[in-house]
Length: 524
Image 1 (tube, rainbow, N blue to C red):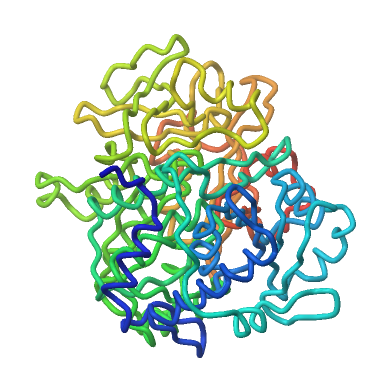
Image 2 (cartoon, one colour):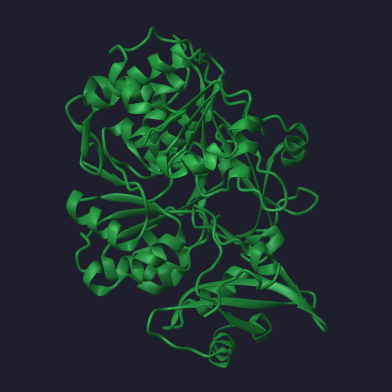
């Protein structure tokens, strides 16, 4: 009676239970679950006709559209592997990832056809190029192919839970991106674990503010379907569009990196007044500042759950689970605790914080170590990169590269990426701690703190600050504010005012760009 653990089981169940419920909203398009799965079946048939079968890779370059969502069902139904690519990368990156993954078919949204046209000759292994929208000469028309395909599912393909489901490429900084291999079992474990700690129902309406390509939309591409919730597609994340969809579709849930939350919290009053109360938010991708949590919960009336993980861990491995003892705390104190990464998900496996010798650090909230983890949520390795895989799994655990402490109550709190810890005069300084203080200044909208060379101290913290619209502050004012609210040696040696911070597609600040100097950074 063994049945492999796979998100495809969620699809089977949703077909039977939620056929008439709204599955997808994408602009004017609305699809019931029956209509959505009919489209997925048709696309599976087309891919099978292209020769796509078990283990073959199909790459996608697209924003959050119904066609991108369909990929997470139509491709695995054949036992094939979805390769969702970061659409904000450049053509050279597309060429590398398409070739490295060995993708047989490439599906591209109209916004990126020009970029991909420029590199098609460098991808000889691709047999079919498909335009998801805006078909042109030399491209197959996705919608025409779906419409012409025979309806009905193909005969079921045997899927082992250890089979690859997706390859998700991490953003490269100093080297080429690495392809994270996620199995059916990995994804199923994350979906179920998320639902244990963050229950959902078929009444939920989920707004896609998070890119679907990023860690498979934190597996919400399957979680929403598992409970019969509605996927509300959002092709571009900007505050007016977010608030319009929140109001029009009566959204109940969204996921967002802290930088997206900051843009929502700082939206004009006329937009924020339109927001429904009671929206539930999952945030991850970077440690959120307590001040951001305060604003989201106190001003908008939303509830926020902080989770932590990596693409390599499917992605969630901890959740800052609320405790009864927190109920009597002030809003500020609750926000400070919610900013921690928390405790293991029930399903995510074993998490430790260890020193260089792989010994557990004491639970004192002070001693810093690296987060390592092992369990069913951890990736199968890096695609075609055995050396990187071996390095990542030294000592039998996946090494996160995140430095953290463990508090006496067992809650983990990240202090920095290992490479982002600032060592000044022999003292460790957490850039996250400095950022959290500066974000409490009424004029500061966003901030990133990095270590820069210093003649006396070796390195010292420098702050790159984006001011709120219509607000002013001076370097001296912000340095004094920091010194008044934390140990003086942690305060930034310099403050640089910029129009925007360099970020990845998922909202993570690219600190390596800041450390490399101010060239290319837009100043105010």
